[in-house]
Length: 293
Image 1 (cartoon, rainbow, N blue to C red):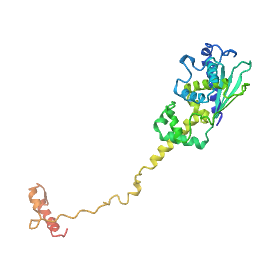
Image 2: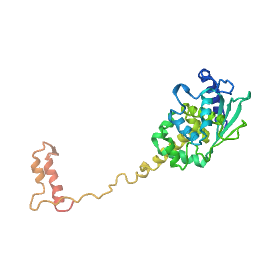
Image 3: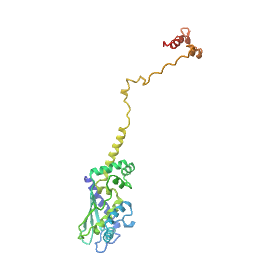
Image 4: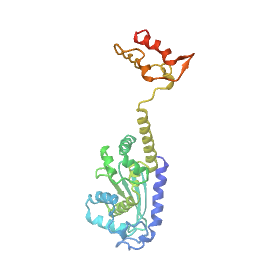
């Protein structure tokens, strides 16, 4: 990945800190912890994880067990003890205020998908026209995780790949600082679900460019497969030729006079060199009847 993802990841931390400064100050720090004005895990809306994106991620955290530590981690998250975090491919780095003066450093790691794996995901997205319309419109499709499943991958981390570290002296993992970072990260996914993709290794801007290119290639291929008209230059030699032969002349009615049609027309009121035009045409009709035309 280029510096794009790192720049946007650093922006997450700055934006979160300014937006959440007021809400973080509404909560007291848990017993034994220093008071901090960090990132609150949306306490005004109830428990973290009400919105679908965070709910899925919180389910991963709570699947680890360690009930007491998760409870204290949720309290840390609600109290603003997560001072900030950044997201880059495969890694979230967070700063969490604990009992010591110096904040603890928390790291959350997951697998970064390879270019080949992302190519499978992008191909699935292009073939799902509703998904690509939403993504190019700046919205995360509600069931995008199904696209990852179809590509043989997962959007959300699974337990076997999720790794976490903290600089606190606690030997158990996850500790309350790791849990707090996870709850605040879950809240961020509700605000910006594209951060999930960035964590997996695909920056939003890069994904958009890739999808636009694949969509245009697919549209061009569909046009190339359509039947092409024959160039006009290839038709000039046979322009005046009929692809089918001329029909056989109708046989004359046996016994009928050759010029009967002329008689049915009646006087034409036209004369040529003093003769009626019908009389001038009769020899031609006689020749056609006798097969001489």
